[in-house]
Length: 121
Image 1 (cartoon, rainbow, N blue to C red):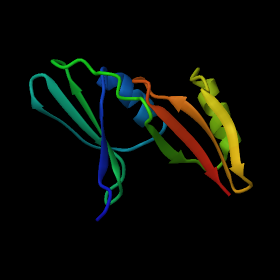
Image 2: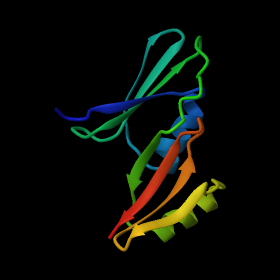
Image 3: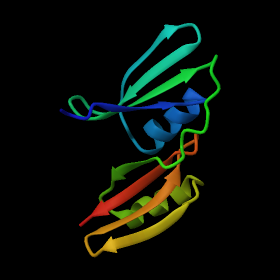
Image 4: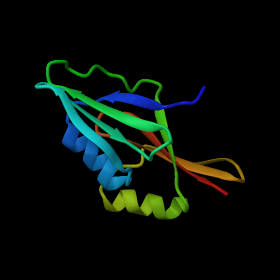
């Protein structure tokens, strides 16, 4: 069994795409509307796990961020911290180094989901 994707229900598709695609650089693979009120965007790389963003204008997004975090590996943590600060995105927690080979910090996406940026040495 292989992990395929995680689905995030978002309030504002454009703000979410600005965060995931523009800020984090995650590729947009598909963008479509299965109905008037629903838009779906698949983000990620072919043959790798993806992030599915769903914006349904009929349904209000309930707090889905409790206890969830999504991790992205970066090459240099200090550069990533400078980059997010330059984009006026507050660092919520960190940097944290639970071992000499791992360092990370947390930010939040537009829906309050924790995003962990991690450097593996």
